[in-house]
Image (cartoon, rainbow, N blue to C red; front, side, top):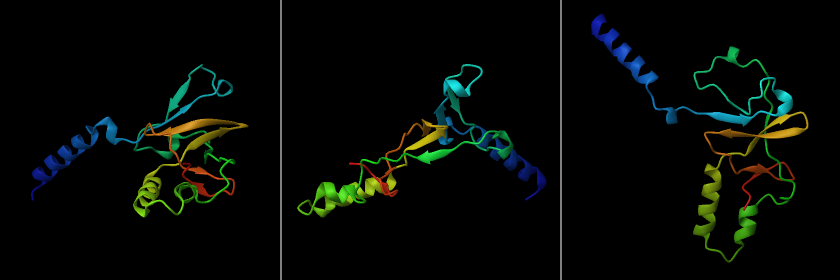
Length: 135
């Protein structure tokens, strides 16, 4: 291949990369607390990739939500019991495997929801600190 073809292919690839639909780009959104803002903004969207580490100047403490009311390590199995068909149980387990964690941004003693790709997530930590899908 000569240089002209390579440069045309490179330019075309670059244009396609910049024209990707917005849905293909991951997003993250969080609410801004009154004590955190000087300008009065209510929410903040994190920058879309590619993200350079220098764009993040403040630390963000993101944690998985802990639900102390869930005391079992196997809520799906407990819900279905022994008499339920295995296929129904397996479907619920498979759905849980594909579920996203429910995240919060910790600000002092407060917790603010941290939403990724407009999905709040369902997986939480139980009282023992194990990740579970609440049913």
